[in-house]
Length: 140
Figure 1 (tube, rainbow, N blue to C red):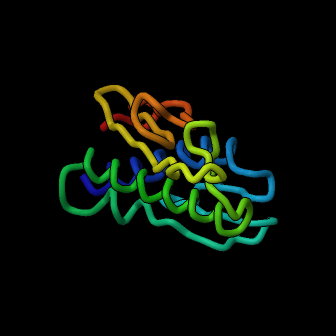
Figure 2 (cartoon, rainbow, N blue to C red):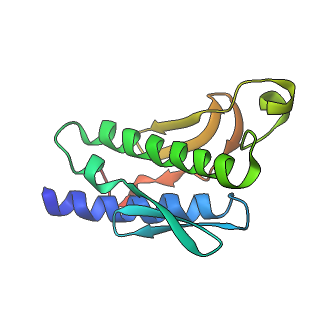
């Protein structure tokens, strides 16, 4: 089981890094490093986010995946706000920091066949990432 979870962590890190890299500001890069995520600013790595330690821990695998994914989305959001935008990110009319509206928090749903990721409330997302199909993750 441990070997399967290591492979799952690696696939999941690669899938979420690819999706986040497509949406963050150009000065930031997001890459998988094994089962973890490296976040860089202007090609200098500033932060590592451990997904593998969460996914591979004791407990229900789907809940561990949800926790790990939420942590990655939240950490990347904080990084973008702190080092690049200095205001809410991602922004959209329903979540405008300039108008004093709430920051769109990470949204993660681990479903039967896919993982849905985004920022904002379910049904009112400021930004939705491409879903990750579970076959893409090697099955759960």
